[in-house]
Image 1: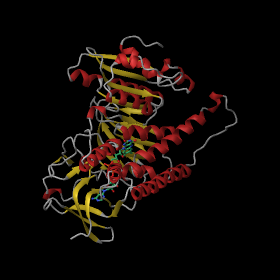
Image 2: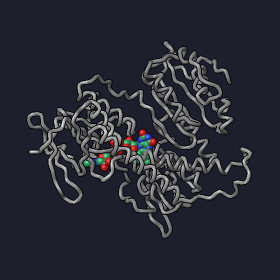
Image 3: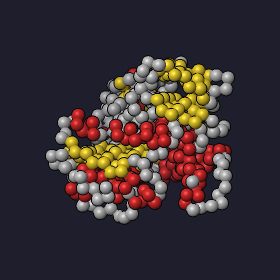
Image 4: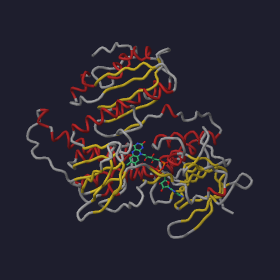
Length: 474
Ligand SMILES: Cc1cc2nc3c(=O)[nH]c(=O)nc-3n(C[C@H](O)[C@H](O)[C@H](O)COP(=O)(O)OP(=O)(O)OC[C@H]3O[C@@H](n4cnc5c(N)ncnc54)[C@H](O)[C@@H]3O)c2cc1C
């Protein structure tokens, strides 16, 4: 029998798990957070959101410096990259935030337990038992009235392909490369693939992107995919869509990726490295789920709108959940919903159509709500507006003219259905659209919402106006 009975035990200390723990602690629940690694933070902090955006910011600084003379700044000279400093800076940011998480756990009286957590079976008299084993083989049992599974995901690889330290890479190895590769084939044009492709292009690598589906960023609105393809071409990024990878082989000094295009022709591309970015597999094996009523669908856990699994008192959040996008803010919000439910507080379910999706490539993409095609398929009579950044004065000032704001609205009632931005600061600007959707705003209300001048956000105002053919600046 374990000494302590917890109100909630969370397996996994990524953004899903640690956010649930903090919020549950704030509600006064007795919480245990079980993490197999020595450091909290999960994929997001160590191998995902944070390190990639650190590299991205450095790539942007480098791009600006290369063009310094355009801004009247002379004497910068030949700018070069110190890759080690870039990696050290990234690692410093991670370390700082790991310490921040440890502080937040103490502040919210969360007990962190290091080790691999696994349910020992179904609950007995409403009490769940989790066996926890450390890397050195020490074992203990944690007992709790509620359990949250937040074990996250791993990079998928292609059949027969294995990653290594410097040639066949996933999101993990690429973040510790010994040097910037001269060339890279990126397999997969989802967020992870296009972000790394864009970053390493800025750092000087020759980039080829190979995507199985017919377009880049296939979950985005079609117009966004088209614009990204156009800008990537202009940046010198080679893209192949509708292309099926047949083989990935190591060569004497790199890799060879062979793929077949829509025309049935086989193409072979040689490069120094290949990044495999073909999606993420949920970590749900070896969690003891078989002995419970938790339902699993192709590895993903089925939950109801409150993230409750088929086993009473067992919840699942984050990348392991079936039918939700694998994003840190989705994991975190789902955790806050669970914490509120368990604490008996008011909560609102996570709505699929109100989740912002951000892709941090150059140009950035931010979107929320229905795409034009989804809105039509859902039976809406659709009205669409589109405003180009080339007509926005702040975009001219910051020297970033690519892209647009696209607004999808319901023609009958003028309700906002979706916003799709590609261009400067799209990942920041999308927040306005999320709030507008959350408050069920109409186009008319948004057209009378004052946006400061000169800002990139004014492109939103013009985007809303363009739905009625009344953008001011075009
Ligand atoms: C390259 C890349 C870039 C990304 N960029 C973004 C971005 O910009 N924005 C965004 O929103 N999302 C981004 N994501 C996605 C984001 O990282 C994930 O959606 C998020 O980390 C999921 O959180 P999670 O808590 O579900 O899982 P994770 O972050 O994967 O955390 C799970 C934790 O559980 C632990 N664990 C697993 N099994 C056990 C066990 N049995 N016992 C104990 N501990 C266990 C793991 O060690 C890990 O720490 C990115 C992902 C990648 C790969």
